Image 1 (spheres, one colour):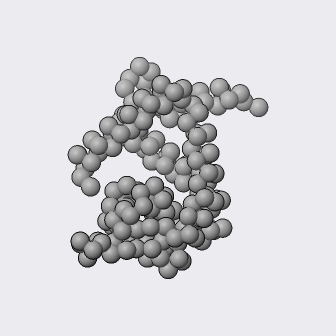
Image 2: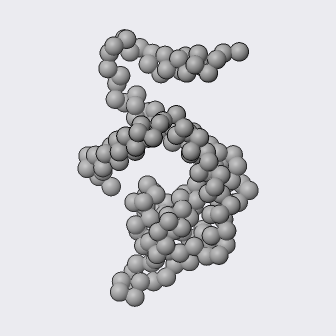
Image 3: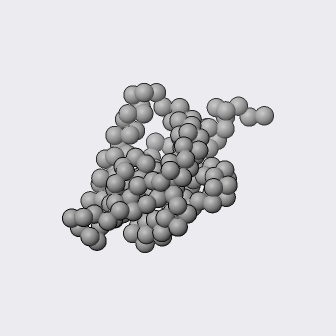
Amino acid sequence: MKSEESVRHSRAKSENQGVPEGAERPVFADIMTLQRIGNLLSRPFFQQYAKRHNLTLNEWRVVVVAHDRPGTAGHEVGRFAGLIPMNVSRAVASLKSAGRIRAETDPENRRQQSLYLTEEGELLFEQIYPKARAHAERLFEVFNTQERQQFSDMLQRLYRRAEDVLGD
């Protein structure tokens, strides 16, 4: 059986295939790596929570935003969750239908709705979040505290740059 170090070396080598040693890795390869990480992070959700809780990933993202930012306007959820407006709208409609979220019309802007988790939505969050957080924490164990902060800072910079270059 291969050692963990041997497996890591083998993966790193295959991810850099075609890149001469010492040469700069193509930036698109890093973009693809970010996408693969996103897919891997979603896998436990689909394997463990989606079917059991009759919940889509987009609905879960709306639940997380509504929990972390009660009263967030529906149109702001997409920005916080990285979703396009149509996906937010569908997720909110489904969550409202399931009794997991409620929307209150803003008295100052009748077109704007503020989102809040219902008791059932809070219970759902409490059932899923601790396990999802544990998965994320295990992922980031690869970094020490300083590296974790640096990585977080770099991700934020990259996100802001992506917004500037690519738009919302």
